[in-house]
Length: 422
View 1 (cartoon, rainbow, N blue to C red):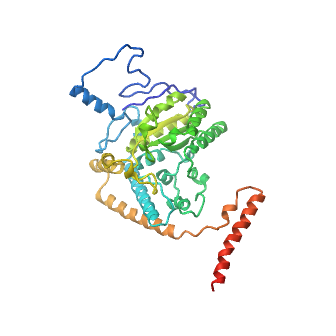
View 2 (cartoon, rainbow, N blue to C red):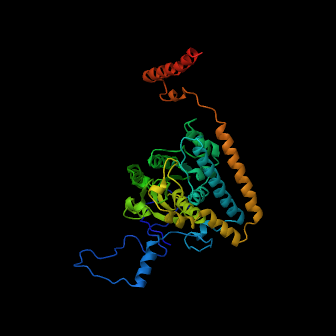
View 3 (spheres, one colour):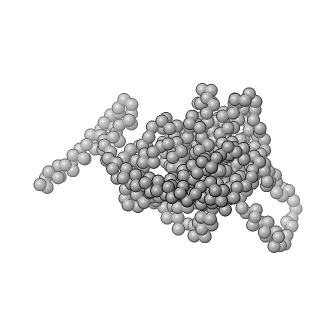
C-alpha cells in the first residue's frame, strides 16, 4: 500500500493555528518521481526472465493502493489511515452495509425501469457502491458536493430522495431537487465541467472564511478533459479547499484507462503541486478513511487533494451501451470476486457484527424500496409542455416568445386534427 504526493502549498488557514504535514507520504512501495533507469545509458542490457522475476513482475502489475479490508473480508492495518476509522462501531459498519445494499437495489430498479420504457436513460453505479458510500459518509453536513450523473450513492448519503434522481431521466424535470437543501448540486451531464464549478465554489467559501470543504466527483474518462486540468491549476494556485474524487472504473465508455494515461491517475496531482492518493475503491472503509483525511486537509487550509478510487463498472456505461463489445467476461468475473458489498458482509459475519436477522430485515427493506421507486416513477405527472421556454432569460426575449408561439401552434394542430377526424 502506498500514497504518493508532492509538496502542498502553504496553508490558506488552519483551525489549529499551524500547518499540516506536507511532502511525500509513502507507505510500502516506491516513491513517485524516482527514476527506474539512468538516462543516457549506452546500449541495452538483456536480462533472462526467471520464475522469480516473472512472479515479481506479476505482483508489480497489481496496483498499489490504500486498503483496510481485503476482498476476503479481512481487516488489515494501516498506520496512516487507521486513525480515521478508529471510532467506527459495529452499528456504523451495519449502516455502511445497509447504504450499499439499498443503493444497489435502487440502481437495479432504475435500470429495470429504463428497460421497460419508463426512463429515457440510466447510468448504473453497479460495482462502485463502496467508493460512493465511503466518501459520502466522510462528508459533514456543511460540505458541498458536485456530482456527475452516476453518484446515486452519494446522493443517498446526502438524503436526496432516490425518486428525485429519476425525474430528469424520465424527462419530467430539469433536476428534481434544490441543491442548497442538501448541499448536493444537480447532476452534471457535461463531462468534467463540475470540477470547475467545485473549484470556484471552494475558492468562494475560502474567501468567506468558512471551514467547510468541497468535493467534486468525476470518472477516469473525465480526467482527460481540459476542464479538469484547469480545475487542478486554479485549485492549486488559490489553495482551494476542494477534494477531487476520481472513480477510476477502468472504462471511459469503451476506452480503457491505459489508453488515456501513461501514469496512474493519482500521480497527475504532483504536476499541479498537491497530493494524490490511490485507494481501493471497492473497500468502503478505506474510501471512508482516505476521504476523511483529504477533507480534513482542505478544512485545515492545506489545499486540494486528488483521490483516485480504483474500482470497476460492473455494468454498462449507460443503458444505451453494450459492454460485451469491448471487454471480456474474464475481466468482469475477476472484479466480481472483489465485490464491495460481499467484502463487507464477510467482515460483518466473521466479526459477529451482524446476524441472519439483520440481513433478512435488510432484504425486506430493499424490496420495499424497489416497490416505492417503481410506483413513484410511474405516478410522475407529465411536464408542462411550455415549461421549456421558462427561465431561459430573466426578463423574457423576443426570439423565445416567437418560438413559444410556434410551438403553441404546433401543439394546437394535433387538437385540430383530432376535431377534424370526428
